[in-house]
Amino acid sequence: MKDYMTEYQKWLQDPVIDEKTKEELLSIKNDEKEIQDRFYTELEFGTAGLRGIIGAGTNRMNKYIISKATQGLADFISSHGEEAKKRGVVIAHDVRHYSDEFSIIAAQVFASNGIKTYLFKDICTTPILSYAIRYLKTISGIVITASHNPKNYNGYKAYWEDGAQILDNVAIPIMENIAKINDFSKINLMNFEEAKEKGLIIILDDDIENTYMEKIKTLSLRDTDIDKNICVVYTPLNGTGNKPVRRILKERGFENIHVVPEQENPDPNFTTAPYPNPEDPKAFEYSEKLGKNLNADLLIATDPDCDRLAVEIKQEDGSYKFLTGNQTAVLLVNYLLTTMKEKNILKNKSMIIKSIVTGDLGKVIADKYGVDTFETLTGFKNICGKLNELIDEYDFILGYEESIGYTAGTFVRDKDAIVSAMLLVEAAAYYKKQNLSLIEVLNSLYEEYGYYLEKNFSLVLEGIEGKNRISRIMIEFRKNFPKQIENISLINYIDFKEQKETDVINNVVKNIDIPSSNVMKYIFDDGSWYAIRPSGTEPKLKVYIYSVADTLENSKHKIEIIENKIKSLIDKIN
Image (cartoon, rainbow, N blue to C red; front, top):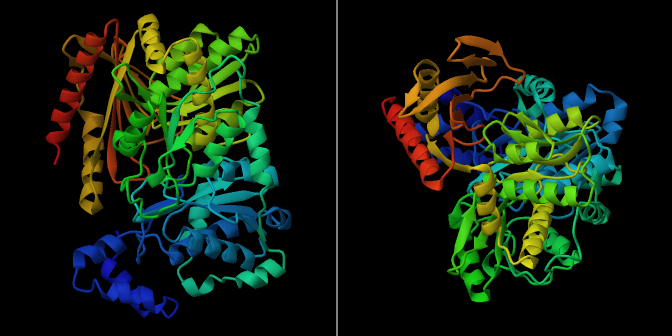
């Protein structure tokens, strides 16, 4: 832990720090707890990049932290030679406070290092940024976004030349470069207009989005045997998705699309959705009101950087049912595989990729169609990393994780809510033509394969105290965990940090071929399981519980007994 008061004084005395920032810091001079929180550590640059609360300090998102991270990335790019610098970097930003300013600062730092930089002229979605890296053949890319976090957050996600978020082989050298920078005065920013005149900063036109849209259309599987008059309500939650999602649906011929007016346009304050996370059903409050007025079949929502998609389906009584990420993924897997099989375009070696904390029903369906399932650590950097590894051997169908992220095709190497929205609306329109709702399709899958249910929850534990408690909980769960919960017995558990799987029955330990990560997973003899891990981007401890049974009631009961046992154990750890 840093000496936070020394760091605080250092910022106040640094001639590089502007007066407005110093005024902000002076306003907290009598609040030692706030000073500690801002300066006890540095925002850690990892494979998820940076994410934090906007404000002054080493543990905050601000222009100085942005410039420092960018210089570390610039040094890594420069180490690859002049050709890498000429290939350059592409930068996108979302609607958040300071996103535009942070993207310009990053471009100025790259330009001062002689690295060509492409900038989108307006807000841009994360998946289009990923596509642009591959389209422009740049060496790297960044997007300034905090995804679905509240309005007081911002972030910085870094990508490498394949269009996927950076993995450790790139992140670690960048982190080492950043650690060497102890003086902000050593970071230079080229004048923006000068950089444009020298061809070091280039403002992009519409060609990238136009070609991206054409690529998405190649993923469509049905066009004439679907009900294109399906009524859909869409909310971009005041983020970047409004224009591209509406555009792809319109170009596919879906005309009965209605956007929530209060959430249509960019709003960095997310006034009608203070926590703009469509994974939370509360985000559908305005959509449901509009949906009921229109008798809409389907409600869809994208998060502010438009890489995640959430769905609600109209039920018989006119209310709407929220689908979890697992349920939406299962519907997509089933729709894609049944359609490809019907049209005889399902290749012999095909694959889906999911995370280790995502449900198993998609895999069971894939097995039926002879499609292989691969598992990775959480995060699309890992899903797309596995895609990059296997792309020459397998035909890629779908990548997904329970936190409402999905992607299809290989032209984007990150989760993509625009692609997902098109495929989901197409699937709903196809089933509507068969007089079926997505709820009815999902229930039929449960009847066929078993009731795979879930109950995921998080403990929000902020600040240094919260961080320490999360650490204690993880330590305790590595030592003490239930071997029996009512009539289900633990058969093995996996410690992904130690990269070992333990067979409880035979007392055998084996190594696993998945990179190290602070996750524990406990598997029972009936196929039910739970996992526990700290979030990589938020001050949370995440718990994932999954059950499987032949009836809905039995599956719900298993969820309940596992949840009660886990919560009782956590409550004992202070």
